Image (cartoon, rainbow, N blue to C red; front, top):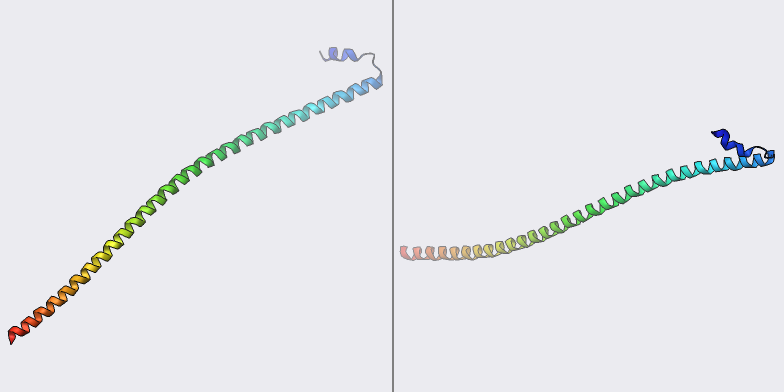
Length: 120
């Protein structure tokens, strides 16, 4: 079948045949270059899709981490408030203990004084 493709070239001058050969070579070269560029394009397209997926995954992970961080901050605030309340309650109770301790000491002195009076 290739002989039929070549039939149209019969009777052409060597100069014209040379030019046709150069043009055919150039066409073949351009076809190969086009195939290489198409392959490069497809490779770059695949890499781009992979990067887009990676960015999307990182965005999702970032959103999850932000929510987790917010939750932890709220928990820390809650714990800080509880700590402050407990600290305040402790101060109140220490104050009450000090008052009662003072009253106890006063009562002991009164008892000692009364015991001394009874002995007399």
